[in-house]
Figure 1 (cartoon, rainbow, N blue to C red):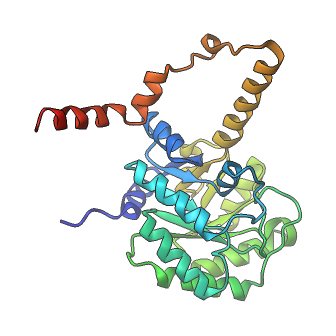
Figure 2: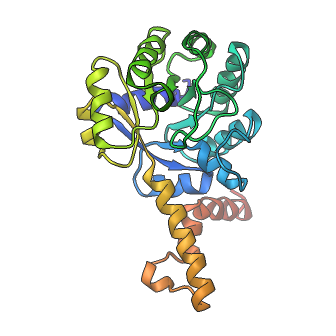
Length: 284
């Protein structure tokens, strides 16, 4: 019996109360998210660039992004939603992008309508390509998937440079081209989130925010939430730890209730490998 496509599992989550996926940027973080009880994870482009010591301004390409997606998807048994930037070119390039991400094991991916080199959706100075050009890319993405279960998400960054009317028009057009979800990036306030819901009442939407709970988002028609707050909180805590070490010469692990090395290794799958080793040594 063929294994269920991860996109089918994500669709089931979205249909049954919605799905919340925390931002993660490597396989280790993905395992910790799952150990905490999360049923989906999101590979952030910002976080992936962070692992290279780079800002999210289009400095990584398809190879780096799809390689990271493959490692994460292989490390956990929950659906992975992945940032695929602009699709890395024209409709032909988008076709290749979708095929490679799907082979890597993702449940969903989103492509955006920014001019390349893109930048993080919450940065200033974004520009977008013409609506018709992006519509072709969405059409190519939908046609390229090998399994209908793969969730294709079309993101627009038009809100900041062009305003609400353009953002809504683009969402409607991308949905007409077959996108399963649309995604207005750069919603910075609860009022923005509610307004997008009011302007697109019949269109399934992804929400990128730390402002709403999953239940609150689902009630507004966002069946999928990617939780931005994990990225800023985790990086912020790293900065505090390094500063504490520099200022005091030590790190107060007990105050943080830090896990032991054994506990970390267990979350990363240590027992599985110990059991395999024991079985091999015993001749089983």
